[in-house]
Image 1 (cartoon, rainbow, N blue to C red):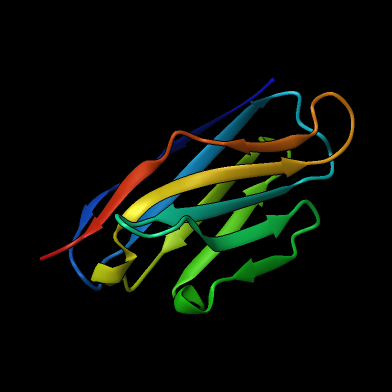
Image 2: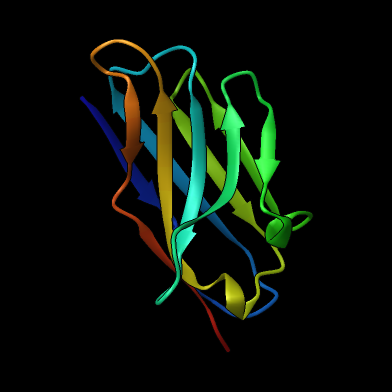
Length: 119
């Protein structure tokens, strides 16, 4: 069993910053991908950023240069530093863990945390 718990969402003005954090617990493989996705009302869930266990990152074009994903493998955490936030960044942000193989392989999601960018 794997559990993901996000924190750090909230209300911020345009141009502001927020930092999201996610902690994974349970049976976590040494090799995995962790990432952040978001879903705005009426839209499909979309990738924001992903990071492999070796530190390779990938970002959505819409957040490149503004968001930074990082992780701590020892603590099974992944963070998303969001700077220069825009109203269009408003969404529920979800943490995801991807690990393959064995009984505990699969895709795991957190419960989501709301980010609202508004003046």
